[in-house]
Length: 130
Image 1 (cartoon, rainbow, N blue to C red):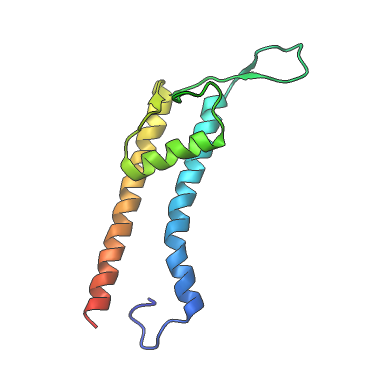
Image 2 (image 1 turned 90 degrees about the vertical axis):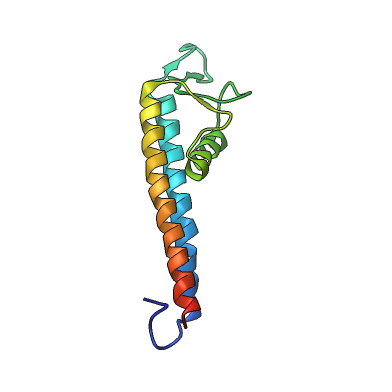
């Protein structure tokens, strides 16, 4: 819509249109990182119920290299790795439930990335034919 109109696009419209692509991409992976963390810690049990500091024992599903207790950055790292490469790197998937989630995430990411590439090619062709 912004490309094919007669008058030039307002800079604010163009900025929002261009920012929506990477923000949408990041939102997908941030949401899946939260979901991975939720499933990882789901139904966890307190390791020492009498202690004042609540230590949680994770259900798991992901094995992070060199980390006993992963934090949010670890889940975001895993999520963006799956989203960019459709594979895992140094993080192992260790449960069937987590494999299902990773499979769904990689399929959604593949189609989202395909649409972004197709839109970029379409944009380049449209701008090149002017």
